[in-house]
Length: 212
Image 1 (cartoon, one colour):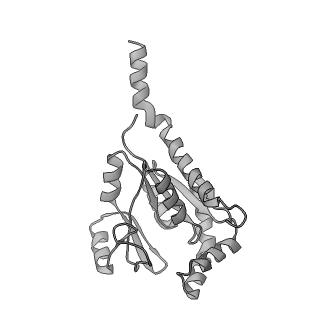
Image 2 (cartoon, one colour):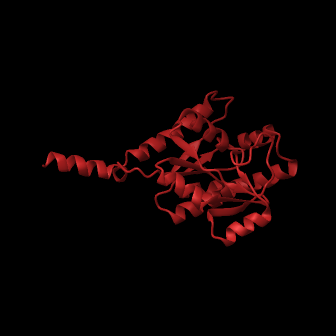
C-alpha cells in the first residue's frame, strides 16, 4: 500500500457550509488533516493565526509569490489566499490525507497542476438557502453579501469540473444535514484509499508470495 497521502480540495460558494463540513470531518476522523492556507484578510472573531489561516501582510504575500512558494493562490473578495507548497508536500510525504479548503479559483489551479488531486464541490440546496446562510453568519456587511451572491452563479458553473458534488441540505428540512455532508466527504476519502494505484505495492507483494 502506498504510504504517500492524498490531497482533497474542497470549495463552493461562500455560505455553502464548507468550513463546518471540514471541521466536522476533522473532528470525527483524526486520520485526515487540514492544510492551513495563507491570507491577507483580517482574522474573523475566534480565528487563530496558524490554525485557521496564516494571516500575512500584503507585502509578505508579494514576497511569497515572488519566491514561487505557493501551490496555488488567488484573489477572492478583495483579499488574497494561497497554499504553501512546503506545507502540502510535508504532509503528503508523511502519509497524511490532506484537506485543502480553498476558493474555486484555487481548486481549479490545484487540479490542473496535479492530476492526483481530488476536487469536491459543496453546493447549497438553493439560492434562497445560500442567501439566508450568509445573512445568518452575521460576519458580512450588506455590500459584502451582494458581492458574494453576485459570484455564486460563476462559482457554481465551475462545479462541472470537479470529481464529486456534495449537496449541503437545508438544516430546517434535514436536521442532520451537516453530519450527512461530512460523512459523504469522508466516504470519498476512504474510497480513494481503496483505489488500485493506492494498493498496487501491496498487490505486487501478495501476488509475488502466492506465486513463489
